[in-house]
Length: 121
Image 1 (tube, rainbow, N blue to C red):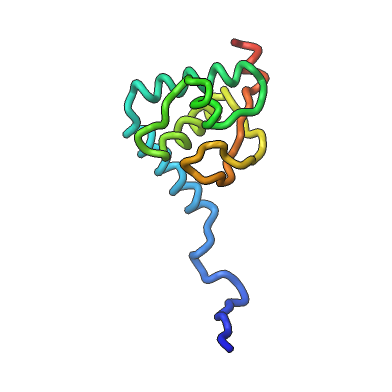
Image 2: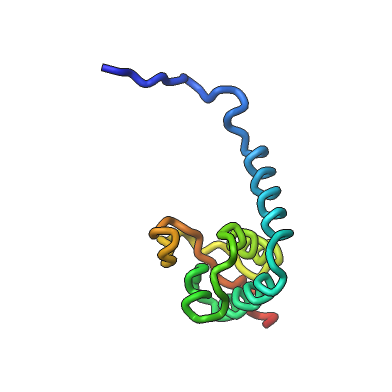
């Protein structure tokens, strides 16, 4: 019988919420900087349209409605939604299975328009 090596507590430096957040923000910044401007503009408009409706949505809904195509790299989605959230357009509305076949039903965030964005729109 083989036993798994278990540590009584996390190894120092392996768990760092601050380092994780820094890595996330660095990745978002790189994805944003490398996103083709025409796709970024179309995606932002699509997110804003869906946000005005006030119902939960995910990336697959933007594609299904013909508002935007798949980006050249999947990291573009996270950057687009994160940027819209930081701008106050959308907020998290839970987690659901993705409808996009390309990600095989993995878990993804769904979003809804913020009440302040919907009032201003």
